[in-house]
Amino acid sequence: MGPKALAAVLILASASAASAAQAQALDPNLGGPGNATHGEVLFKQRCQICHNMPDKGGKGGLGPALYGAYGRKPGQAAGFAYSDGVKAAGFVWTPEKLNLWIQRPAAVIPGAKMVLAPISPAQDRADIIAFLKTRSTSTVQTAAAAKPAAGSKKKAKKATS
Image (cartoon, rainbow, N blue to C red; front, side, top):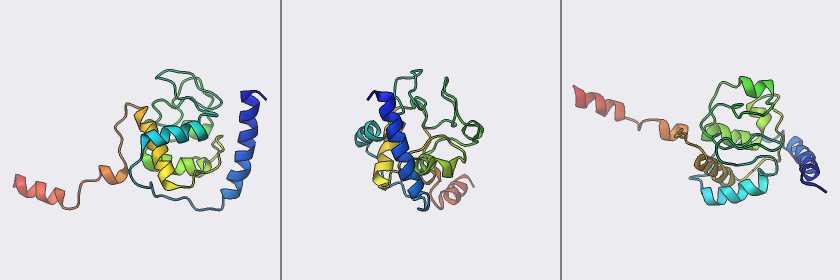
């Protein structure tokens, strides 16, 4: 069986597992700081069947190439036929969005073509996201890290008064 036939079989098997998981709620937890080294191993096991991780400008596979995906808007990789929903998505791939996407793409963007068996362990999701971050020039942070500490505005205001 060639690689494309194997990928098709795996996608169909993933679709069955994904439809069974549709009733499960999405887990917003990121599982702590990600380990990019472990994330690379997981990427190769779970994602590379469809997605390549070439250097900037490399070709995709059945799915788009993911170099630079972290921190940019969905549907931006050249040469891939994205669904209308993905092309119209008005957000940036933050850790929070990627965390939900890895669990169930259609919950993030209705009509998305990507089907996969959800990655349930929060730490595994955090690790994959940490790996994706190493393959991007973006500095986008988690929402929690981007928020100023409580009271820091008040302190800053007092300091300038």
